[in-house]
Length: 165
Image (tube, rainbow, N blue to C red; front, side, top):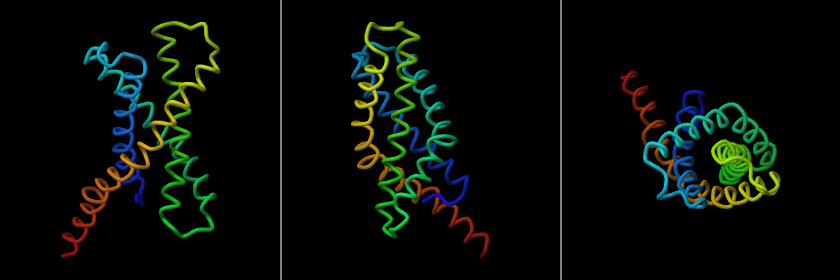
């Protein structure tokens, strides 16, 4: 897939956009806010979550997830195992940190609840993980890889071929 830093940035932008979009709607639905929030609030919350997710993807979760996945799949040459390992590690890390982000935003807006913070985190994390893993593996992963190879990877190759001629 991505072979350069620029390609990794494009891939990350597309993947984060799609995952944050779906996860935002999912979390609004879970919290009974899907029809309650204004469009402007929804867009601003999405934009902030997208920036947080992109920074996590590029600088913290992404690099560690790829290192762990490569160690786990070091003895195989099958690309599907590498893709599934990276996806699983990415979803685990992103669900962990974005669940913390979600709880912090809830606490900022609504204050602390009477429940245990650890219990609330585990509940939010598990709900996010259970939704995000199939979303990433079945829907977003294939869509983003298709978009990336069709419009970004090939467009770079086409430009290189045109310049060579």
